[in-house]
Image (tube, rainbow, N blue to C red):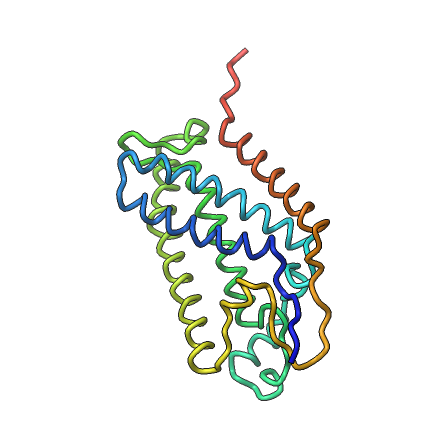
Length: 226
């Protein structure tokens, strides 16, 4: 058995930052009032992180790239059905079922963050882009944000945590430790992710670009009529 670097530092920081931000979003939503200011800020941060993850999924390290965990429907179905050959395969990074969880969470969080930009609470808090749409449309998006996307997020997070617990207690696989240390114990030769400082600097530049983009969008103002 030997250690193989699977998760680069940017991916690990992204993961745990996202966990913290989701907790902040839930808590501030429940508190309401002045806490909603932090709810919006956390939402902007989530949007920047998701944008970064999309870029990192295209230009990042080996196991962070989407191409490394996009599986065919037949492979996913075989894995779900616990087909012997599918279970014998050694999946570095995300397995076929885990890949579905990742894509579902990213898509839902993106929808949640974007819809939050157009949402309102009928009291004192409006998303920064509410001014560009009608009140009726904002109300519909608010319903989606609070009732549909938020509920789905709870379900996806619960399934994600349940899967981690299942792998830990039933299959004796610790999925949390590699996301902390970056390393996975392997009994076969496998290429390591390029977790160099050069790649880390690239990730930082991409994150800064995404943050700047979110800042620009959040601060958009309607163009005055000529």
